[in-house]
Image (tube, rainbow, N blue to C red; front, side, top):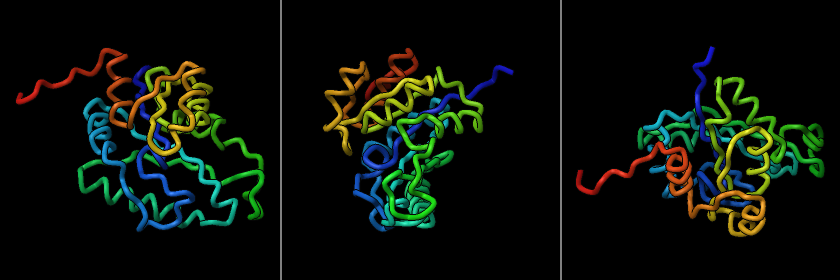
Length: 198
């Protein structure tokens, strides 16, 4: 069976929504302006849109898994206003130095480990060689690399702190999520810019 899907994996904070350190409340959710255009392009080209996010604030006691669900519901609400959606959110609530019992473990789902990408790939029948990830940290890019898909760093969120290392490792750097999507599609000879006024 060869009918595999292709996907764009997105880090959440600093890529899809504005970076708020340890975001704990839905009312602080703000979609990055370029994200709406990026998601509409991905939809047009039939990419699954999957969020892969580390949420160690659970292990550190800053918020609960219930609050993560509420935040994702708010992202969904904002995107739905533009006829856009996320296919699924995958998150890691762990951190080995956390203080909340049960979450303070050295897990196998925290990026840069690729487990959540591989899990999404199995669940959605995704061809990883035809898929890519957009992140604002080298740990995001490394997870994609280990999973077997390409990755692009954006300068939003924590991206500026990771540019030098990302470039040394051979990753492309884009200004924002929209530019990252267009770069990837152009590199695959898929994207043609529509002429103005057409």
